[in-house]
Length: 260
Image (cartoon, rainbow, N blue to C red; front, top):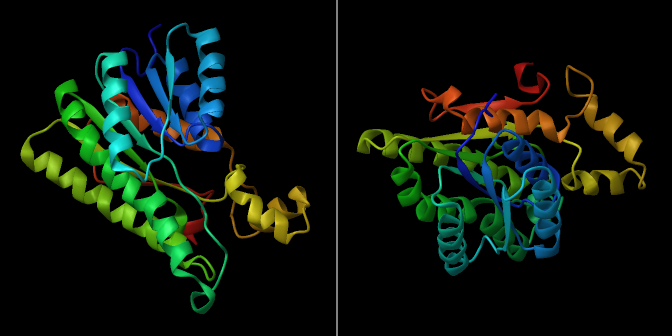
C-alpha cells in the first residue's frame, strides 16, 4: 500500500524535539519526503539519520532560526531544490515564554514569544506559498494551541500569539481560496502534550513530572494529557489529500477540554 502522503514534500519547523519529531516520523512513514528545520541543527540531523535508516533518502536537515527572514528564504530554497518541490508546510516552531502576569511581563519576553510563535508563521506562509501553489495541491498546517481559544492567567504573550496564529490561518486560507490557488491552510490547537513545553509546569511541581501531569489532566474530561502522536495524526490528515475540502478550520486536540 502507498502511504497517505506518498510523493509529497514537507517542511517542518521546530523538528528537533516534541511535536516536530512526531510529525516528521509520521509523515515520512506515510511516504513524504521531509525537510526538518530547527535552531538545534544537531537534533534535526540526528532525527534525519534515524528516519533515513528506515526510509532511505526521506529526510534532510537544516539549521533554521525561524525569526530571521533571510534564513526562511535560504532554507525554503534549499529544501525545494533538494526535494524537487514543496507541498506541505508545518509551522510548528514555538516556545511557551515566561509564566508571568501582565504587570510583571517584560517587553523582551513579549517580543521573543511574538517573534518565534507568530512572526515565524507569517514568514513561513509568505515564502512557502509560491512553491505550495506550484505543487498543485498545497497544505499549510499552523500549530496553535487551546491557549489561542481560551485564555489563562500568566500566559499573556503565549495566549496572544496562539490566538493570532488561529486568525492568521483563516486569513491565509481565504486569500488562497479566493485567488484560485489549490493551497489550504488550517490550524491545530493542542492542549497539554507530553513535550518539553511542559517543563515550567514540572518545575512548579518541584520537578515531579508525574505530579505535574496529573494536575494538568484534572481540567481535561479524558483525565490525561496528550501524546505527541495525537497531534501528529491530525497533521497527517491535514497534510494529506483526505482533507482536500478542509481549509480555514481549527482542530482541537484537547481531550474535550473546550467542550465544557
